[in-house]
Amino acid sequence: MASPAVPSARARSTAPPTPPGPASAPAAPAAPVPEAVPAGLAIVPRRRPGRYVSGGLALLATALLVRSLAGNPAFEWPVVGAYLTSASILRGLLLTLWLTGAVTALGFALGTVLAVARLSGNPVLQSLSWGFVWIFRATPLLVQLLFWFNIGALYPELSLRLPFGGELFAVRTVDLLGPALTAVIGLTLHEAAFAAEVVRSGVQSVDQGQLEAAASLGLGRGRVLRRIVLPQAMRAILPPAGNMLIGTLKGTSVISVLAVHDLLFSAQLVYNQTYQVIPLLLVATLWYVAVTSVLSVGQYYLERHFARGATRAGLPPTPWQRARAAVRRAVGR
Image 1 (cartoon, rainbow, N blue to C red):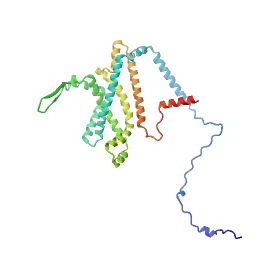
Image 2 (spheres, rainbow, N blue to C red):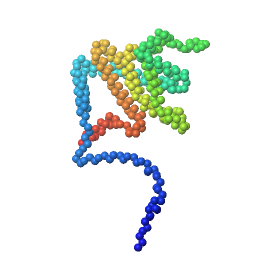
Image 3 (cartoon, rainbow, N blue to C red):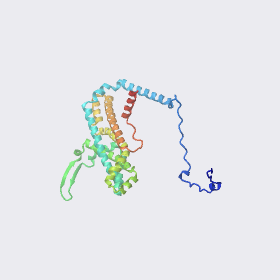
Image 4 (cartoon, helix red, strand yellow):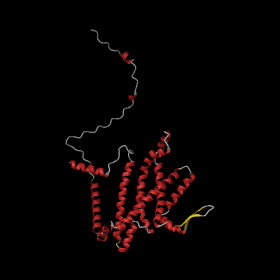
């Protein structure tokens, strides 16, 4: 029986070598395989006794502070509770809220116009916008309010005249600009100077490559502004805008020097009659804290709304979602 043919050494040596392919590149090092945990053993996180000590000290200090506030008779908490929802305090609170909303809306509207002028290619508009922001950011708010309150000394009368005709109308400045309107004008101009910088920085934070891509697709400027620029700019605008809103709420207390019946001035009127200064100041403080807390919660959820899709990992759970998850775990046990 014939044995199978075996290729000779010469035939094996003359065989063409296998051409190198992509697999000939050096292989990447293999990922380390985690060792299996032996049966009966559990992974225990690292103990950090410093956290427990610092947390305990912080809780102790908080408890001592709360005990001091609740037990000090000088705070006169019954008087605070009696005046917290009084009619005069609530009227002052409503005026404060109205001023905050009106000034914020008007200030950001004017600030947006100033930001657009600053970003335009017109050197005249750029200079005027920069000058406005420079003047009103460099002047203290109280000085601005006092200046507008005394504007009648500079312009006793406001009138409109035709070039070759008579006078259309004339009004005395002191009759036109009352304390409330003066406060709105002063606060709005002050707010607009800061809002202009906030809006400008938010628009400039958008990547220019996206604008170029939108222009190459033939999208209109209005659509680019609504669908591309504003959703991304709002992520940079909202945090400082929220701080400005809260600052405006507290800044309205400055208008008490103009005898405008806001929250603080209403509290001052009461304690000027009753001489209960500390309880009435606490009433104003509690209302400021309550309204600021509500605005902070609204700012948090607005930021989450405009942050959708900004990260691949998704948004972290809200405090309410964390609390619900903790309750489920506790009930499941």
